[in-house]
Length: 145
Image 1 (tube, rainbow, N blue to C red):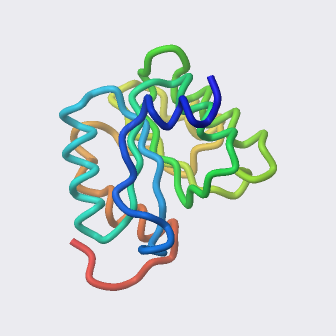
Image 2 (cartoon, rainbow, N blue to C red):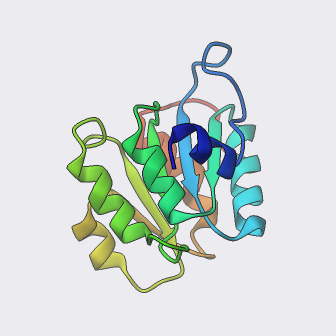
């Protein structure tokens, strides 16, 4: 599966880069309820969010040259888990410095950091911290919820 097929298997971008130079976030989450709620929150900040529900498809996107300013990963995903996505991202020269947040109900805090995640947020209790965490990692200031 190439990048074009991967794009078709994932959610749509919230805006075009040419129109909106705001941060572009890849959010990998297989729960549609969580994915939709978090995407809407982040889009409310004016940020571009691309969602993906499958770990293998997300891996193809991470390997691609697409611009992602931050990766927001669940751990429990079909085909490739979030820990493996973080590890693989850190092996890629163009993703070594990309901030990674692991957002998961899994008990994998230590493993997430060892895999390369900058921050671990626990579902559901830390969902309210996503905006401030992304803003901190991307050095964004302003009117944050």
